[in-house]
Amino acid sequence: MTGTVLPFGPGGLAVVGLYLASLLVVGWLGHRARREDSLRDFYLGGGSIGFTVLVLTLYATQYSGNTMFGFTGKAYRIGWTWLSSVHFMTAIIVGYLLFAPWLHRLAQRHQFITPADFLRHRYGNRGIDLLAPLVMTLALANYLLAQLVAMGRAMQGLTTADPVVAFAWGVVLLAGIILVYETMGGFRAVAWTDVIQGIALAIGFGALLVMVFSMWGWPGETTRVLLDGGEQLRARVLPPGARASRNWVSYVIIFGLGAALYPQAIQRIYAARSGAVLRRSLAVMVFLPLLSSLVAVTVGVTAAAHVPGLEGAAADRVLSVVFHQVQASSAFGYWLVVLLFAAVLGALMSTADSCLLTISSMITRDLYQGFLRPDAGQAHLTRVGKLVSWAMVAAAAGTAIWMEGQPGRPTLVRLLDMKFDMLVQLVPAFMLGMHWGRLGGNAVLAGMLAGLALTFGLYGNATVDAWGVHHGLIGLLLNLAVAVAWSFAWPGVKEREWTASRGYEDGRSHGTN
Amino acid sequence: MTNPDGPRYLQIRTWLVYAALLVLAVPWYWPADSTLLLLGMPAWVVTSVFVSLVISIYTAWLLLSHWPLPDDPFCDPGDNTDESTGEQL
Image (cartoon, rainbow over all chains, first blue to last red; front, side, top):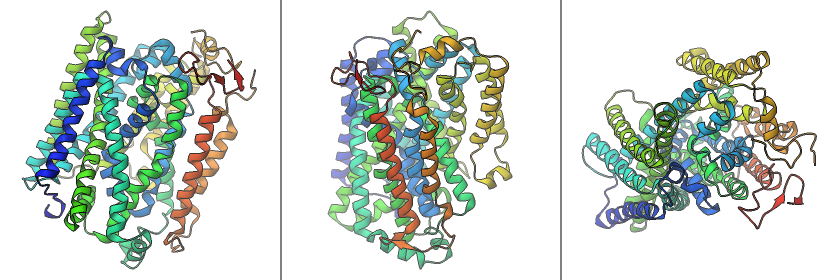
């Protein structure tokens, strides 16, 4: 661990402490700004988010610990082939073209809070009402777990204490801060802290690039070192083979469909003040992979040339190693790393807080209110939502700390893949069902069940692994086939009115629902 | 007012453009041992990044010029044009 420790002095620790304290202050401001004690106010900030906050909260939420640690780690392992990450992060915005304009409008009109509110409105099917929130909660819990793991690893890199103890303290301290500001201010606190975290993240990516180039030279120098460095290093600059190319396409499709259905991103679509705000925000977001993912990949490849020797999950710590070397280089390097560390915390915490808030909303609104207490009041539900957040964090933090002590723990990117295998099974329900009235609730339910069963049944299948295609995409093919075939056999009862409500048949009429 | 092809985002030509760009972006067509360099970097990397930029520009254009629904005029008084038709609401 000695090569990965960043021994911050009192000045550096004070800056990090101030940064964390500022998040708590923002949480308190969010608490003061609340308008009513209702679920929509707590979970969506009343649905009135403007352009700047929306861009930064989308950015800070989608670019996470996985981008900073997982993407640099993966690029370190496989080289420029991880350039696929630039394309699949762009594909998320492309995926929104299929449903976001219509979903936003419906959400504004019908006051949706959770993603499942749309499904309830569209299908009115109790099976979907139960299964969809469960799938989304499981997928997000997985993502939350990945962020907590990354928080622990970040803390390991900050102290010379025993790595297991440092990991546990990192998880507990940072998750605790998230809980406090989120409980105080709900969505406003999360979105406003995302503004701080998004700005820190953007500056951090820029500083990271400057730092790496100043230490190790321009990419030409890195390319030369890799090409001259033996078979393993050379492979990192050569074009991908057939399997890696298929895997590349698979990533683009599963992100374009699955990540566009991130429940926390869907809630941000709901929260946008208007369609104009949403489309402008997405038009900015579509360029951010070139300023973020591409930086992470460049740093990972550069580190592969100049800091060799990390294997497997240990490669996820390559960023900490890079930080350590920069920090030791000069006083400027020291303060640069302090800034970068704040950016890393911002990336982790902004994603974790959004996941947590969305999980809390789905359990409270879709499961607790939907199935147990349909007549519960808004104030009661808001209290339940806060309790759910605390319980989720306790469970996820405990799991993260337990996992860290286990041999053969999964890499961050592996956790990411499992999440999308599940989320992508919601594609027919949201994207197809948005435009095809014949699609019925039972068809969607049958398709989801078939798709999920096949996806998990294929885990560990050597043939599928050899193709390089995500299990979730194969499950999605079956899912779609079942849903479409079922709908032709037994059309959905809402076909006519649903098709009319989309608003593009006559370019004017925007709904009868 | 009727657009017989439906909204631009759901038209086949939109997705054929994306498919063509994806075919260019994924470096499957480069020789496995290609060490051709451009700006000091592997040429396939530079090509792929450039295509990514094109995809972003195309998507931003679609978002800003072909958003399929008019924005709520009461929510955003400065922008009350139906972009699918170009008419004021």
